[in-house]
Length: 445
Image (cartoon, rainbow, N blue to C red):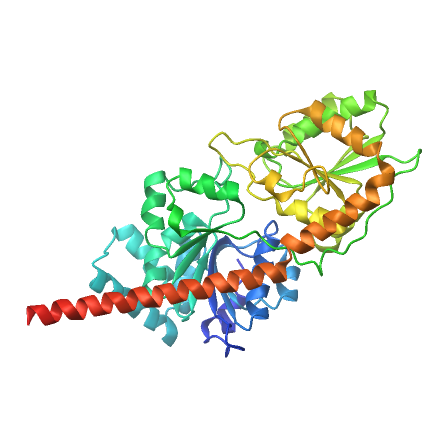
Protein backbone atom coordinates (compact mmCIF):
# COMPACT_ATOMS: atom_id res chain seq x y z
CA UNK A 1 0.00 0.00 0.00
CA UNK A 2 1.40 3.44 -0.92
CA UNK A 3 2.07 5.85 1.91
CA UNK A 4 2.42 9.21 0.17
CA UNK A 5 -1.09 10.20 1.14
CA UNK A 6 -0.06 10.12 4.82
CA UNK A 7 1.62 13.50 4.33
CA UNK A 8 -0.95 14.90 1.94
CA UNK A 9 -3.62 17.44 2.70
CA UNK A 10 -6.21 14.68 3.20
CA UNK A 11 -5.96 15.49 6.91
CA UNK A 12 -6.31 19.24 6.36
CA UNK A 13 -9.68 21.03 6.26
CA UNK A 14 -11.74 21.10 3.08
CA UNK A 15 -11.09 23.92 0.65
CA UNK A 16 -13.35 26.94 0.78
CA UNK A 17 -16.54 26.21 -1.14
CA UNK A 18 -17.19 27.99 -4.42
CA UNK A 19 -20.84 28.86 -4.95
CA UNK A 20 -24.12 28.52 -3.09
CA UNK A 21 -24.70 24.90 -4.14
CA UNK A 22 -21.15 23.70 -3.41
CA UNK A 23 -20.81 20.80 -0.96
CA UNK A 24 -17.85 19.06 0.62
CA UNK A 25 -18.33 15.30 0.47
CA UNK A 26 -16.62 12.39 2.22
CA UNK A 27 -16.89 9.26 0.05
CA UNK A 28 -16.62 5.76 1.52
CA UNK A 29 -15.86 2.89 -0.84
CA UNK A 30 -14.35 -0.59 -0.77
CA UNK A 31 -11.55 0.20 -3.21
CA UNK A 32 -10.06 3.45 -4.48
CA UNK A 33 -8.46 3.90 -6.92
CA UNK A 34 -10.27 1.10 -8.72
CA UNK A 35 -9.71 0.24 -12.35
CA UNK A 36 -13.25 -0.98 -13.03
CA UNK A 37 -15.07 1.98 -11.47
CA UNK A 38 -14.29 5.07 -13.60
CA UNK A 39 -17.86 6.23 -12.92
CA UNK A 40 -16.79 6.92 -9.32
CA UNK A 41 -14.07 9.28 -10.49
CA UNK A 42 -16.67 10.95 -12.73
CA UNK A 43 -18.91 11.54 -9.73
CA UNK A 44 -16.08 12.91 -7.60
CA UNK A 45 -15.11 15.28 -10.41
CA UNK A 46 -18.70 16.50 -10.56
CA UNK A 47 -18.61 17.38 -6.85
CA UNK A 48 -15.69 19.70 -7.58
CA UNK A 49 -17.35 21.07 -10.72
CA UNK A 50 -20.22 22.11 -8.45
CA UNK A 51 -17.70 24.07 -6.32
CA UNK A 52 -17.13 21.54 -3.54
CA UNK A 53 -14.23 19.39 -2.39
CA UNK A 54 -13.60 15.67 -1.88
CA UNK A 55 -12.14 13.25 0.61
CA UNK A 56 -12.25 9.50 -0.03
CA UNK A 57 -11.86 6.58 2.40
CA UNK A 58 -11.20 3.07 1.10
CA UNK A 59 -10.08 -0.30 2.45
CA UNK A 60 -7.82 -1.14 -0.48
CA UNK A 61 -6.32 0.49 -3.55
CA UNK A 62 -5.27 -0.70 -6.99
CA UNK A 63 -2.19 0.53 -8.78
CA UNK A 64 -3.25 0.55 -12.43
CA UNK A 65 -5.68 3.46 -12.71
CA UNK A 66 -3.71 6.08 -10.78
CA UNK A 67 -3.15 8.12 -13.94
CA UNK A 68 -6.92 8.65 -14.10
CA UNK A 69 -6.99 9.69 -10.46
CA UNK A 70 -4.00 12.00 -10.89
CA UNK A 71 -5.55 13.66 -13.93
CA UNK A 72 -8.67 14.33 -11.87
CA UNK A 73 -6.67 15.94 -9.03
CA UNK A 74 -7.70 13.27 -6.52
CA UNK A 75 -4.25 11.80 -5.84
CA UNK A 76 -3.94 13.48 -2.43
CA UNK A 77 -7.58 13.33 -1.41
CA UNK A 78 -7.96 9.67 -0.55
CA UNK A 79 -7.02 7.67 2.48
CA UNK A 80 -6.62 3.87 2.39
CA UNK A 81 -7.01 2.49 5.90
CA UNK A 82 -6.28 -1.11 4.85
CA UNK A 83 -8.37 -4.26 5.00
CA UNK A 84 -6.24 -6.39 7.31
CA UNK A 85 -4.91 -5.98 10.84
CA UNK A 86 -1.27 -5.08 9.95
CA UNK A 87 -2.35 -2.42 7.43
CA UNK A 88 -4.88 -0.96 9.83
CA UNK A 89 -2.38 -0.87 12.68
CA UNK A 90 0.16 0.78 10.39
CA UNK A 91 -2.39 3.40 9.35
CA UNK A 92 -3.38 4.14 12.95
CA UNK A 93 0.17 4.40 14.30
CA UNK A 94 1.23 6.79 11.54
CA UNK A 95 -1.71 9.15 11.97
CA UNK A 96 -3.16 8.97 15.49
CA UNK A 97 -0.97 11.72 16.89
CA UNK A 98 -2.19 14.34 14.48
CA UNK A 99 -4.26 16.87 16.38
CA UNK A 100 -7.19 16.39 13.98
CA UNK A 101 -6.98 12.60 14.51
CA UNK A 102 -7.06 12.94 18.28
CA UNK A 103 -10.20 15.04 17.88
CA UNK A 104 -11.84 12.28 15.80
CA UNK A 105 -11.02 9.73 18.53
CA UNK A 106 -12.64 12.05 21.06
CA UNK A 107 -15.68 12.50 18.80
CA UNK A 108 -16.12 8.74 18.47
CA UNK A 109 -15.81 8.27 22.24
CA UNK A 110 -18.43 10.96 22.86
CA UNK A 111 -20.74 9.29 20.34
CA UNK A 112 -20.45 5.97 22.16
CA UNK A 113 -21.30 7.61 25.48
CA UNK A 114 -24.21 9.76 24.26
CA UNK A 115 -25.79 7.14 21.99
CA UNK A 116 -25.05 4.13 24.16
CA UNK A 117 -23.95 2.27 21.01
CA UNK A 118 -21.03 0.39 22.49
CA UNK A 119 -20.02 -2.57 20.33
CA UNK A 120 -18.04 -5.77 20.61
CA UNK A 121 -14.34 -5.32 21.54
CA UNK A 122 -13.15 -6.45 18.08
CA UNK A 123 -15.37 -3.91 16.27
CA UNK A 124 -14.53 -1.25 18.85
CA UNK A 125 -10.81 -1.75 18.14
CA UNK A 126 -11.42 -1.60 14.37
CA UNK A 127 -13.36 1.68 14.68
CA UNK A 128 -10.72 3.18 16.94
CA UNK A 129 -7.90 2.37 14.51
CA UNK A 130 -9.94 3.69 11.55
CA UNK A 131 -10.94 6.89 13.33
CA UNK A 132 -8.04 9.12 12.09
CA UNK A 133 -9.61 8.94 8.62
CA UNK A 134 -12.68 10.73 10.00
CA UNK A 135 -10.82 13.86 11.05
CA UNK A 136 -12.48 15.99 8.34
CA UNK A 137 -15.86 17.68 8.65
CA UNK A 138 -17.87 17.16 5.44
CA UNK A 139 -21.34 18.42 4.63
CA UNK A 140 -22.36 14.87 3.79
CA UNK A 141 -21.03 11.29 3.61
CA UNK A 142 -21.69 9.24 0.47
CA UNK A 143 -21.00 5.49 0.70
CA UNK A 144 -20.61 3.27 -2.37
CA UNK A 145 -20.24 -0.10 -0.64
CA UNK A 146 -22.80 -1.37 1.86
CA UNK A 147 -20.40 -3.72 3.63
CA UNK A 148 -17.69 -1.08 4.00
CA UNK A 149 -20.15 1.59 5.15
CA UNK A 150 -21.72 -0.78 7.65
CA UNK A 151 -18.30 -1.48 9.18
CA UNK A 152 -17.69 2.27 9.53
CA UNK A 153 -21.25 3.27 10.41
CA UNK A 154 -20.58 4.43 13.98
CA UNK A 155 -17.73 6.63 12.74
CA UNK A 156 -19.95 8.05 10.01
CA UNK A 157 -22.81 8.77 12.40
CA UNK A 158 -20.43 10.37 14.90
CA UNK A 159 -19.69 13.08 12.30
CA UNK A 160 -23.24 14.39 12.74
CA UNK A 161 -23.95 14.87 9.02
CA UNK A 162 -26.31 13.15 6.54
CA UNK A 163 -25.28 9.76 5.20
CA UNK A 164 -26.38 8.70 1.71
CA UNK A 165 -25.62 5.35 0.09
CA UNK A 166 -25.51 4.07 -3.48
CA UNK A 167 -26.67 0.46 -3.91
CA UNK A 168 -24.83 -0.91 -6.93
CA UNK A 169 -26.51 -4.29 -6.83
CA UNK A 170 -25.47 -7.48 -5.11
CA UNK A 171 -21.75 -8.25 -5.28
CA UNK A 172 -20.46 -11.31 -7.18
CA UNK A 173 -20.89 -14.69 -5.48
CA UNK A 174 -17.29 -14.67 -4.21
CA UNK A 175 -17.78 -11.38 -2.30
CA UNK A 176 -19.53 -11.21 1.09
CA UNK A 177 -22.65 -9.08 1.47
CA UNK A 178 -25.08 -7.93 4.12
CA UNK A 179 -27.90 -10.22 5.19
CA UNK A 180 -31.48 -9.00 4.71
CA UNK A 181 -31.70 -8.23 8.43
CA UNK A 182 -28.33 -6.51 8.34
CA UNK A 183 -29.38 -4.43 5.34
CA UNK A 184 -32.59 -3.37 7.08
CA UNK A 185 -30.70 -2.33 10.21
CA UNK A 186 -28.09 -0.45 8.18
CA UNK A 187 -30.69 1.26 5.94
CA UNK A 188 -32.52 2.54 9.02
CA UNK A 189 -29.45 4.64 9.83
CA UNK A 190 -29.00 6.27 6.39
CA UNK A 191 -30.83 9.25 4.97
CA UNK A 192 -31.08 8.42 1.27
CA UNK A 193 -30.33 5.46 -0.99
CA UNK A 194 -29.37 5.93 -4.65
CA UNK A 195 -29.80 3.24 -7.30
CA UNK A 196 -29.03 3.54 -11.01
CA UNK A 197 -32.12 1.90 -12.56
CA UNK A 198 -35.71 1.05 -11.71
CA UNK A 199 -34.66 -2.60 -11.72
CA UNK A 200 -32.04 -1.87 -9.05
CA UNK A 201 -34.69 -0.06 -7.00
CA UNK A 202 -37.06 -3.02 -7.02
CA UNK A 203 -34.17 -5.39 -6.36
CA UNK A 204 -33.05 -3.33 -3.36
CA UNK A 205 -36.56 -3.26 -1.91
CA UNK A 206 -36.88 -7.04 -2.35
CA UNK A 207 -33.66 -7.44 -0.34
CA UNK A 208 -35.08 -5.57 2.65
CA UNK A 209 -34.34 -1.96 1.69
CA UNK A 210 -36.81 0.82 2.59
CA UNK A 211 -38.75 2.05 -0.45
CA UNK A 212 -39.32 5.55 0.91
CA UNK A 213 -35.58 6.33 0.93
CA UNK A 214 -34.75 5.20 -2.62
CA UNK A 215 -34.04 7.55 -5.54
CA UNK A 216 -33.10 6.48 -9.08
CA UNK A 217 -30.05 8.36 -10.42
CA UNK A 218 -28.05 6.74 -13.26
CA UNK A 219 -24.28 6.64 -13.27
CA UNK A 220 -22.98 9.31 -15.58
CA UNK A 221 -20.42 9.16 -18.37
CA UNK A 222 -17.85 11.90 -18.96
CA UNK A 223 -18.49 12.60 -22.62
CA UNK A 224 -15.22 14.55 -22.93
CA UNK A 225 -13.45 11.21 -22.41
CA UNK A 226 -15.59 9.27 -24.91
CA UNK A 227 -15.40 10.93 -28.30
CA UNK A 228 -17.86 10.02 -31.02
CA UNK A 229 -15.78 8.15 -33.60
CA UNK A 230 -18.08 5.65 -35.33
CA UNK A 231 -16.22 3.09 -37.40
CA UNK A 232 -17.35 2.27 -40.92
CA UNK A 233 -18.81 -1.18 -41.62
CA UNK A 234 -16.21 -3.81 -42.58
CA UNK A 235 -15.42 -4.46 -46.22
CA UNK A 236 -15.97 -7.89 -47.72
CA UNK A 237 -12.42 -8.90 -46.79
CA UNK A 238 -12.43 -7.50 -43.24
CA UNK A 239 -13.78 -9.26 -40.11
CA UNK A 240 -16.69 -7.86 -38.14
CA UNK A 241 -15.17 -6.67 -34.86
CA UNK A 242 -17.18 -7.63 -31.75
CA UNK A 243 -16.36 -6.42 -28.23
CA UNK A 244 -17.29 -7.14 -24.62
CA UNK A 245 -15.83 -5.19 -21.68
CA UNK A 246 -16.43 -6.50 -18.17
CA UNK A 247 -15.35 -8.77 -15.35
CA UNK A 248 -14.73 -12.34 -16.47
CA UNK A 249 -17.30 -13.95 -14.22
CA UNK A 250 -20.19 -16.31 -14.83
CA UNK A 251 -22.94 -13.69 -14.52
CA UNK A 252 -21.42 -11.69 -17.41
CA UNK A 253 -22.30 -14.44 -19.89
CA UNK A 254 -19.22 -14.33 -22.15
CA UNK A 255 -19.56 -18.03 -22.99
CA UNK A 256 -22.80 -17.40 -24.90
CA UNK A 257 -21.08 -14.97 -27.27
CA UNK A 258 -18.28 -17.49 -27.81
CA UNK A 259 -20.88 -20.14 -28.68
CA UNK A 260 -22.54 -17.63 -31.02
CA UNK A 261 -19.28 -17.33 -32.97
CA UNK A 262 -19.71 -20.92 -34.16
CA UNK A 263 -23.17 -20.05 -35.51
CA UNK A 264 -21.91 -16.89 -37.17
CA UNK A 265 -19.23 -18.92 -38.91
CA UNK A 266 -21.96 -21.20 -40.31
CA UNK A 267 -23.85 -18.10 -41.47
CA UNK A 268 -20.77 -16.98 -43.38
CA UNK A 269 -20.03 -13.97 -41.15
CA UNK A 270 -16.30 -13.44 -40.57
CA UNK A 271 -15.93 -12.16 -36.98
CA UNK A 272 -13.28 -11.40 -34.42
CA UNK A 273 -14.33 -11.18 -30.78
CA UNK A 274 -12.37 -9.00 -28.34
CA UNK A 275 -12.76 -9.67 -24.61
CA UNK A 276 -11.53 -6.97 -22.21
CA UNK A 277 -11.41 -7.71 -18.49
CA UNK A 278 -10.17 -10.16 -15.91
CA UNK A 279 -11.82 -12.47 -13.40
CA UNK A 280 -12.36 -16.00 -12.15
CA UNK A 281 -13.83 -17.31 -15.43
CA UNK A 282 -10.80 -16.35 -17.52
CA UNK A 283 -9.19 -19.79 -17.69
CA UNK A 284 -12.51 -21.51 -18.39
CA UNK A 285 -13.32 -19.14 -21.24
CA UNK A 286 -9.90 -19.66 -22.79
CA UNK A 287 -10.46 -23.43 -22.58
CA UNK A 288 -13.86 -23.06 -24.27
CA UNK A 289 -12.29 -21.06 -27.11
CA UNK A 290 -9.61 -23.69 -27.60
CA UNK A 291 -12.08 -26.60 -27.56
CA UNK A 292 -14.21 -24.87 -30.22
CA UNK A 293 -11.17 -24.11 -32.36
CA UNK A 294 -11.75 -20.37 -32.20
CA UNK A 295 -8.25 -19.25 -31.19
CA UNK A 296 -7.96 -17.09 -34.33
CA UNK A 297 -11.36 -15.49 -33.72
CA UNK A 298 -11.09 -14.52 -30.03
CA UNK A 299 -8.62 -12.12 -28.41
CA UNK A 300 -8.29 -11.86 -24.62
CA UNK A 301 -6.89 -8.41 -23.84
CA UNK A 302 -6.97 -8.53 -20.06
CA UNK A 303 -7.36 -5.12 -18.42
CA UNK A 304 -7.23 -2.10 -20.71
CA UNK A 305 -7.38 1.43 -19.38
CA UNK A 306 -7.41 5.02 -20.58
CA UNK A 307 -6.54 5.54 -24.22
CA UNK A 308 -6.04 1.80 -24.82
CA UNK A 309 -9.64 1.11 -23.83
CA UNK A 310 -10.99 4.06 -25.80
CA UNK A 311 -9.15 2.82 -28.90
CA UNK A 312 -10.57 -0.67 -28.46
CA UNK A 313 -14.09 0.78 -28.46
CA UNK A 314 -13.60 2.88 -31.61
CA UNK A 315 -12.01 -0.06 -33.44
CA UNK A 316 -15.10 -2.18 -32.80
CA UNK A 317 -18.29 -2.48 -34.84
CA UNK A 318 -20.66 -4.11 -32.32
CA UNK A 319 -20.49 -4.15 -28.53
CA UNK A 320 -22.24 -7.06 -26.77
CA UNK A 321 -23.17 -7.15 -23.07
CA UNK A 322 -24.36 -10.76 -22.63
CA UNK A 323 -25.07 -10.67 -18.87
CA UNK A 324 -27.43 -13.30 -17.48
CA UNK A 325 -30.29 -13.15 -14.98
CA UNK A 326 -29.14 -13.59 -11.40
CA UNK A 327 -32.16 -15.36 -9.89
CA UNK A 328 -31.60 -13.62 -6.58
CA UNK A 329 -27.83 -13.33 -7.02
CA UNK A 330 -25.65 -10.65 -8.61
CA UNK A 331 -27.24 -9.14 -11.70
CA UNK A 332 -26.41 -6.23 -14.03
CA UNK A 333 -28.01 -3.02 -12.78
CA UNK A 334 -26.93 -0.51 -15.43
CA UNK A 335 -23.81 -1.57 -17.31
CA UNK A 336 -21.93 1.71 -17.79
CA UNK A 337 -19.96 0.02 -20.59
CA UNK A 338 -23.12 0.30 -22.67
CA UNK A 339 -23.01 4.08 -22.46
CA UNK A 340 -19.26 4.15 -23.11
CA UNK A 341 -19.78 2.10 -26.27
CA UNK A 342 -22.72 4.14 -27.55
CA UNK A 343 -20.94 7.42 -26.80
CA UNK A 344 -18.03 6.16 -28.90
CA UNK A 345 -20.25 5.27 -31.85
CA UNK A 346 -20.35 1.48 -31.41
CA UNK A 347 -23.55 -0.48 -32.08
CA UNK A 348 -24.79 -2.19 -28.89
CA UNK A 349 -26.53 -5.49 -28.20
CA UNK A 350 -27.56 -6.22 -24.61
CA UNK A 351 -29.53 -8.99 -22.94
CA UNK A 352 -32.92 -8.63 -21.24
CA UNK A 353 -31.23 -8.84 -17.86
CA UNK A 354 -31.51 -6.57 -14.84
CA UNK A 355 -31.46 -2.88 -15.77
CA UNK A 356 -29.97 -3.36 -19.25
CA UNK A 357 -33.31 -2.99 -21.13
CA UNK A 358 -33.90 0.36 -19.36
CA UNK A 359 -30.56 1.61 -20.69
CA UNK A 360 -31.24 0.83 -24.35
CA UNK A 361 -33.79 2.36 -26.72
CA UNK A 362 -34.54 -1.09 -28.10
CA UNK A 363 -34.84 -1.29 -31.87
CA UNK A 364 -33.82 2.32 -32.41
CA UNK A 365 -30.35 3.00 -30.98
CA UNK A 366 -29.72 -0.29 -29.16
CA UNK A 367 -30.87 -3.88 -29.35
CA UNK A 368 -32.05 -6.32 -26.66
CA UNK A 369 -31.92 -10.13 -26.92
CA UNK A 370 -32.80 -12.93 -24.45
CA UNK A 371 -30.08 -13.96 -22.01
CA UNK A 372 -28.28 -17.32 -22.16
CA UNK A 373 -29.13 -17.55 -25.88
CA UNK A 374 -26.24 -17.89 -28.30
CA UNK A 375 -28.66 -18.29 -31.20
CA UNK A 376 -30.37 -14.95 -30.42
CA UNK A 377 -27.00 -13.19 -30.21
CA UNK A 378 -25.90 -14.66 -33.56
CA UNK A 379 -29.20 -13.71 -35.19
CA UNK A 380 -28.99 -10.10 -33.97
CA UNK A 381 -25.36 -9.75 -35.07
CA UNK A 382 -26.35 -11.10 -38.50
CA UNK A 383 -29.36 -8.76 -38.60
CA UNK A 384 -27.17 -5.70 -37.93
CA UNK A 385 -24.51 -6.95 -40.35
CA UNK A 386 -27.15 -6.99 -43.07
CA UNK A 387 -28.21 -3.37 -42.32
CA UNK A 388 -24.88 -1.64 -42.88
CA UNK A 389 -26.50 1.31 -44.64
CA UNK A 390 -28.46 2.10 -41.46
CA UNK A 391 -25.44 2.14 -39.16
CA UNK A 392 -24.77 5.93 -39.29
CA UNK A 393 -28.34 6.73 -38.21
CA UNK A 394 -28.31 4.13 -35.40
CA UNK A 395 -24.91 5.32 -34.17
CA UNK A 396 -25.97 8.99 -34.14
CA UNK A 397 -29.17 8.19 -32.24
CA UNK A 398 -27.21 6.18 -29.71
CA UNK A 399 -24.81 9.05 -29.05
CA UNK A 400 -27.78 11.41 -28.62
CA UNK A 401 -29.39 8.92 -26.20
CA UNK A 402 -26.30 8.97 -23.98
CA UNK A 403 -26.01 12.76 -24.16
CA UNK A 404 -29.64 13.10 -23.07
CA UNK A 405 -29.81 10.57 -20.23
CA UNK A 406 -26.27 9.72 -19.09
CA UNK A 407 -24.16 12.87 -19.44
CA UNK A 408 -22.01 13.15 -16.30
CA UNK A 409 -22.59 16.92 -16.03
CA UNK A 410 -26.38 16.48 -15.99
CA UNK A 411 -26.15 13.58 -13.52
CA UNK A 412 -23.81 15.63 -11.32
CA UNK A 413 -26.31 18.48 -11.11
CA UNK A 414 -29.10 16.06 -10.23
CA UNK A 415 -26.98 14.40 -7.57
CA UNK A 416 -26.13 17.79 -6.06
CA UNK A 417 -29.85 18.56 -5.76
CA UNK A 418 -30.45 15.31 -3.87
CA UNK A 419 -27.44 15.98 -1.65
CA UNK A 420 -28.89 19.35 -0.65
CA UNK A 421 -32.32 17.82 -0.08
CA UNK A 422 -30.75 15.19 2.22
CA UNK A 423 -28.97 17.92 4.19
CA UNK A 424 -32.17 19.97 4.47
CA UNK A 425 -34.18 16.98 5.71
CA UNK A 426 -31.41 15.95 8.10
CA UNK A 427 -31.15 19.43 9.64
CA UNK A 428 -34.93 19.60 9.98
CA UNK A 429 -34.97 16.22 11.73
CA UNK A 430 -32.21 17.28 14.14
CA UNK A 431 -34.07 20.51 14.91
CA UNK A 432 -37.29 18.59 15.61
CA UNK A 433 -35.46 16.18 17.90
CA UNK A 434 -33.94 19.13 19.76
CA UNK A 435 -37.36 20.75 20.24
CA UNK A 436 -38.78 17.44 21.48
CA UNK A 437 -35.87 16.98 23.87
CA UNK A 438 -36.25 20.50 25.28
CA UNK A 439 -39.98 19.90 25.70
CA UNK A 440 -39.35 16.73 27.70
CA UNK A 441 -36.85 18.53 29.91
CA UNK A 442 -39.36 21.33 30.51
CA UNK A 443 -42.02 18.76 31.49
CA UNK A 444 -39.64 17.12 33.95
CA UNK A 445 -39.00 20.46 35.61
